[in-house]
Amino acid sequence: MIHSRLSGLVAAAALVLYAPLSGTKTQVLCKGFLPENDLKRPISVFQVGGLTQADFNDVLDQIQAFYAPVIQAKGGTLRINRLWTDDTVNASAERSGSTWVLNMYGGLARHEIMTKDGFTMVACHETGHHLGGAPKGESWFGPSWASNEGEADYFASLRCMRNIFNDADNARFVQDNTIDPVAKQKCEELYTTQAEENLCMREAMAGMVGALMFKALHKESVTPRFDTPDTHVVSQMDDDHPATQCRLDTYYQGSLCVHNRSTELSDSDPNVGTCTAANGQHDGLRPLCWFKP
Image 1 (cartoon, rainbow, N blue to C red):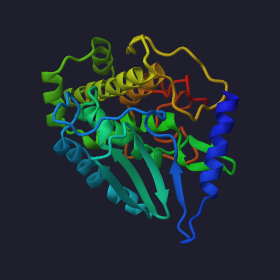
Image 2 (tube, one colour):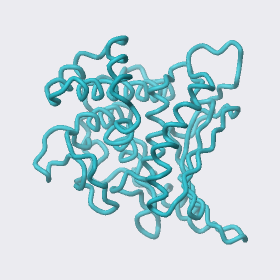
Image 3 (tube, rainbow, N blue to C red):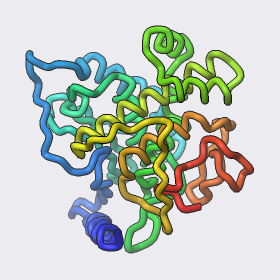
């Protein structure tokens, strides 16, 4: 774990130190939504599952419409690179000067496990690196601009999907799809209106799509579940990609956090605008398999 963290710091330092002669500094979040992999999903008439180009663009249109003004208010410009023809199975975030970038690849959208909701969750994760607040990833020079991997996951369901999904679509989703009974029961326990329950259930199931992607990528035999949370407890903050079950736990807990989402997240205090034990809450907390309070 120490060697992995040190390697990450070296890579981060190298990226921060790189500045083209033009004077524009590009700060790349080198670890994508998925760990580095050699999977490819080219455009093919034989595609089975995954998204169409129309669905790919629809998801990114919604992210652009909602978050471009949010980022503009912070002095940045949102640019979404819609790399539909690229067969890379991943996504990433970076900053170039005042331009806040999402790199969204067609290969990930075309993966047979991916759904439109799952892809929304991915886009929300990448947005979360820019807007998720604390905890931040670390570099040689201290906290970086980017929220760490676990926080980007948490932001996806804590805030972003709640802003993108609408009540009518949530109701249709719950009506037309099988909802995991564990997630359904917990959402109904915590929320008081049908609309809130529907949103919670839809977010939880989007998180499951991501978890199944991680399982497939790692060629794991154990299927992540809502009722088998990761029991590992970190001794220090883990900024890297959490394990598969831990990531599902993070999406799930974000969907369960009952809070005032109009409160802006803090770049320094992870207790602001979130659910934490320090705030006296018991549900919707970041999992301890990556988060160190």
